[in-house]
Image 1 (tube, rainbow, N blue to C red):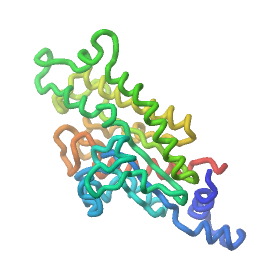
Image 2 (tube, helix red, strand yellow; image 1 turned 135 degrees about the horizontal axis):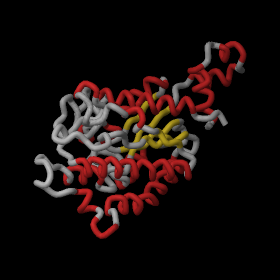
Image 3 (cartoon, one colour; image 1 turned 180 degrees about the horizontal axis):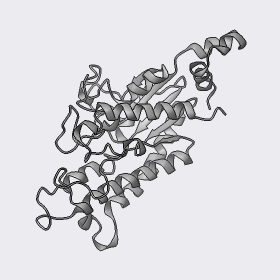
Image 4 (cartoon, one colour; image 1 turned 135 degrees about the vertical axis):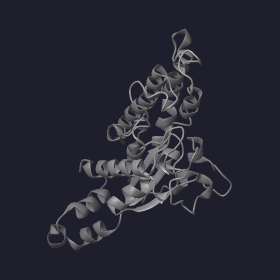
Amino acid sequence: MKTVLRLALATALSTGALATTAPVTAAATAAEPLRYVALGDSYAAAPLVPPADPTGPACLRSLAGYPRIAAEALGAKLTDVSCSSATTRHLSAPQHPGTAPQYDALTPATDIVSVTIGGNDTGLFGEALGCVNVLPQPYGTSCAQENTAGGTDRVRARIDAWAPVFATVLDEIARRAPNAEVFVVGYGNYIRTGGCHPVQPFWKQDADYLQGAVNHLGTVLKQTAEEHGATFVDTYTPGIGHDICAAPADRYIEGLVPTRTAAPLHPNAAGSRAIGEALATAVRATPAG
């Protein structure tokens, strides 16, 4: 673990022993809040979840997104530049007029970086809309059947082709923030096995196909993170029982027609809190060297 992060976490988790036993210089360093930069797309930005972040109106960023929850739990100083609809291109180029590239928030003084990216690059969430079937079978078309026609899964192929791009993202984060611990936050549990048609308008095979694609993207994110010295944060497990098929009050991810203030197929306030807590737990659990 990087020295500053190790010292700061030791302070946060200790019962005061550091203040009485450690050198004054180490205690002073540890007392400084962790400097945390959040990068990513709408899964991190939590669009429409109140309250809105007034510093990034074009990004539809919430002050209740998972980066804010994690920062509060860690006592960290947060710079959240996540932005709805972001792709990896927007890490290095402006997404909107007046919006700086997300990479610009990174410096050698950064202690923690979180990133959620890839859903838009791979067209994954656009695919979900193509899988909607309001009517029961056979009155419609299966997206699972269409996307796997000919023996090749086109969505998974796009995800695999994008993996090297994500590898360059992690390399660039490490170059700009060489002293930071990097946490890759995965996409979660959207829809349970078999779906719940007609509550959510996805046929059984298409529900399983969509979640399988999300899981495959998660696998690619996890493998690439491990290969580049980053930590993958699982958001699937905390979401079990809280997918879009759950009772409205139990959902972490909103369905096609949201029942709480959040964007369709995105984390609501409860989901963002669960993800932020999972990230904070992962930061605390990072081995101390």
